[in-house]
Image 1 (cartoon, rainbow, N blue to C red):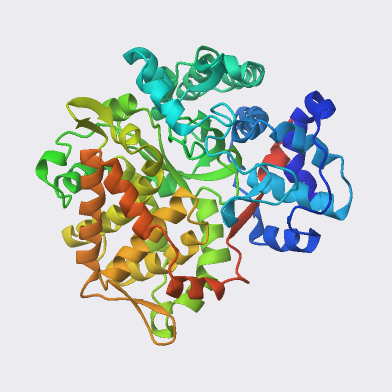
Image 2 (image 1 turned 90 degrees about the horizontal axis):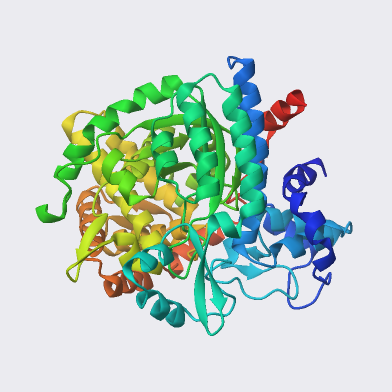
Length: 565
């Protein structure tokens, strides 16, 4: 059980403080899965050693990484509390149960960061827990979405901006609600994490890393993340950390509130240098998007770095169920407008996903003739350009005469539609670069087939998850447009005569919805296409023996922590 212990030791930092409030959990009952079923559910995540070459790092860099891993473990525990207010007590209860059933529940709890199976439409796998709250622990338990929205809209402009912003939670205040900033709500955890970041800043000799760690520690205590986001954009050197509140996926009520996450990584400088050429193409891609010219941005942010890294440790929202292969940050529109956004590619994670999931999937969903077109280069390039495309297209918009953002206008529909946009426009952008000669012509042969196979990889994440629903929208749209076809034997193929038109059409539709801030149209698109249709379901049923994703074992992180003690 070494694997299980490695996964649950870190979050147990919260156990001692909450043991007295532990929940009583029965081994069976309430329709929850038994031990064997839980083990089968967990087996959908293939245990995978995550390693990175740190042999060329200085002793100071190794010590910095060890401090960052320690801070990340605090973030992991903090995110548990963000997911659900009952998570701490439930974790304490599960940790005390040494039975096979108890160990299975604990293992799967830590994969999912809670008692709901993210791959199974958030079905509970522990008895006596409520349905997964759509607003996570960012809003009062049981508060109606309509009541929250009405309260927010009635606030003065400055307070409404805070209420709909990333870094506050909403709590009850008598018959109404009140705002609590993150630095107050999570004060104990953030003070400890800030202390570790300051210690790491004292160790490092890299000025930009020192600046980021110092400013991010200050942000944890002030709740103002702007300066540290800018400092993160300017990071240089071998050690590349990302730590703080970023993604809004867990807030399924409004997509307003940011979950804490951490990625401790080291740069792959050779791969990073190869990809920098894409940054110079962004304005040209924007200028040629298949949308009305008035919706294009004539002047993108000047700084748009692409960094290829190898992961050493991931925590919080960065390590729950399906693992992140790449990310595009920051999400603060002010920083994006002034500085652009940084795209971080987790290459060793992508390598693992391709080998453990995509290759075996392709042998089932593609016809024999198409299987040879599967390409890691096309897979990796599309992930890179997916992240680039998050920064292109509409962001700050005018809706009803009011300046706002796409995220705020589209609310709960935003995340799935934004993921679909980045995917489909990523295909458009790659084709544009192929046509220009920036990318080799032969990539066109593998691009769409690799994406088609990868769509089945992603839709297995579940359509209740933003990436999975976004893929369903694309897959169904392209099938409806006959850009993808279903063969007599149930396999799928690319229709070369229709695929480019289909990609441009969906790119246009999604970006126009975003530019107009059209919530009702966004919801209608998601309701109509964000589902698993029977032919796709039949293909998915053939994939049951293939892992859905990886379960990381942070081998290099353990080694660095051990050597630092």
